[in-house]
Length: 150
Image (cartoon, rainbow, N blue to C red; front, side, top):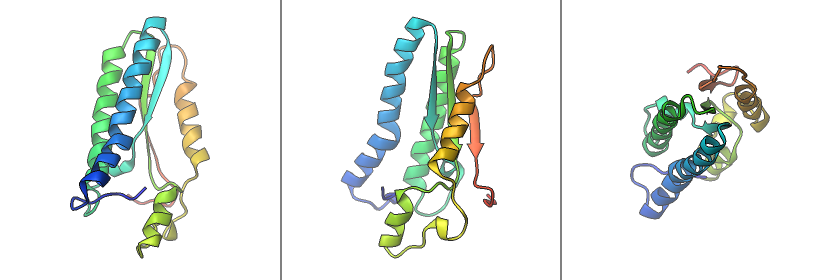
């Protein structure tokens, strides 16, 4: 999916908001209600290290991911003691369709500069969060490609 810039068309912005924020928030709330009623569960939302990067062209994507991080942290606080664990994984450079989209528009993909993580790398991080037992809640994890220097 193309990352809209601050000069993007409204329909591109609406889609980005729907996919990167609204859908995740709605799903989290739906599952949180059900899990809280059962007294157990695990919600892990996926953000991006892009939430903390201020660079031209990243404002909308980064802003939505930052908003998702705040929502997830507040959800964790609101569900504390309910038996529902809430966590957030923020991956760095990961091999996704974004790089092919960038290349199709004549831009270099970040994967040309460093080896990107694969979906399996992120899945292992999520699994680690879900494997916590007892009173432990792995609430936040940043995961970077081994050669990332930011």
